[in-house]
Image (spheres, one colour):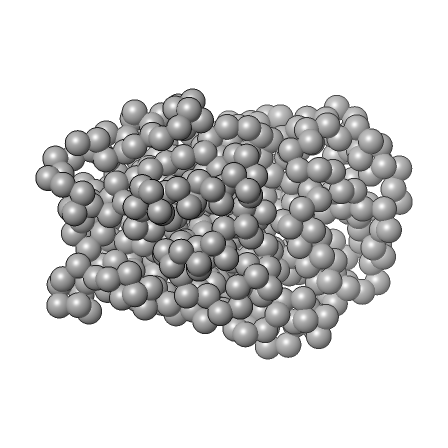
Length: 440
């Protein structure tokens, strides 16, 4: 029986699915499996740099779970002993389409849980539906704080296994304060939807607290998501008096902007701070904007290159051997979401006398827990135990001539309780109030 299903034309377009041979096993019947939906961008501008690497990271972990090949503490086979039947499908198409797909996967195909989604807009649309349909849903990536601060203040079925945009904004502002003492002003270019809006808002609010002498531009740029063309925005940035440019562009938008801005000389004139540029560092190679400040929304991707834990060493080797490129942020984050499911099912089964647990038991096991991610511990200690916090890392991208690869230099690490608002505290209010309770 083929455990990896490929429903839909879009999923068939994605390469590499056939390589997941470890996701096949002789399963007697459906009762022996846990059916996991794994949505990610397989087509469109979000796919090459983010969605496909996220799929690859999920595949690596799912295959190893089914075979029992993961290092400790995840060496047991399956989820509470049952094989994962993964339904990997395309996230492209927007919130309305994805809500319909979600309902189809739950109501018609009978998935047991969902682990996926990248876009903040998609996650915002899915959140109330997941609660309505009462299905365990783990968001491994999407960044908007609105998920639990506005849309779903009392979650039961929805979890997010990484930090949100507030952590990015605070870490970025702290990095600027420590490393750019002469900064007098800042502007930005961010996509005009939830992720871009929240990223700019939180960076701006953090800068107002930490670097109050720096003036914010009134002409920050707001291109549509996946627009791909940034001539007018680059012209505006080139003419702006502010030296520092903040950007949370990601995926194809990020790469298109880098190519177009490089040709115009923007990176020679401005200091650019990217929230999510780690996703493209290996794809772009020597075409990267070296000297730029960048993050990976946590301790992921290139920031984990020197992490010596057995789990990380194993992950990087298996991933690179299979895909001929190191794992990036999306790869780590998607893998982390699957590990959260593995942790919760196994913990719930242990508390259930070794019997396969109910969904409520799995949810109880994950709420408020701390589990080991690929790169660092993950603390599910916000939003009633449904929102994760991890350490955060930011640095300067440079080229290692000796080894012929991009590397991070001047890296700063921030603890989770330094950059995330305390549990029960709204991120915007926390920032406006001076980040009280931050432990840095």
